[in-house]
Every structure is written in structure tokens, then in C-alpha cells.
Image (cartoon, rainbow, N blue to C red; front, side):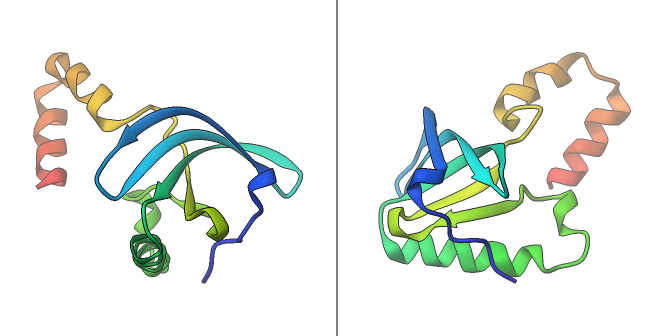
Length: 116
């Protein structure tokens, strides 16, 4: 299994979503198979971290039903150390969690058990 390696010209980078010690994540629009797809573009500080995460994600995506628990790696731009992930339609987890304060208790318990 592999992720298509696309040129930077097929990627329109947008607003910064977050930044950590090893990478930064930006909104992006990616041209794949003639369609524009919204994505999260993760740019790595070094080749080592880029290769490690790419290889790990490809291994995890090969596990049956793993897509239920992970965002999908849809492409890469190896020349720029970019991994392109599906953009989560409901937004990031940090923004979603405050909404759970008013959610049904059974749902909150189920989510806590799933996260544990």
C-alpha cells in the first residue's frame, strides 16, 4: 500500500491549523484524479519524521477497519515533506469536546471508554 506522491503544484496551502515540535499542519486543497479535495497538510521539519509517520500510517491503514479510528492519508508530496490527510468534516477533537458537556451521559461514557 502507498500514498500517491503528487507535485506541490497540485496543492493549495491555506491557513495554519497547528504547530508542534516536529511538524506544522495547514488546511489545503489537493488536486487528485481531476477533483479538488479538502485536506490537512502536515509539513515535517525533517525527512526522518516524515518517513516514520508515512510508513506508520500506511501500515495502520492496512489493518482492516482501521479507517473507523484514523484519518486517512490520501497523498504525499515527498519533495516538500508533506503528508496530506483527509480533513475531518466535524473539525478537530479539541473543538468538539466542549459540546459534550451537554451530551447524553451514555454517550460521554462511551467516548471516554473509547479514548482510554
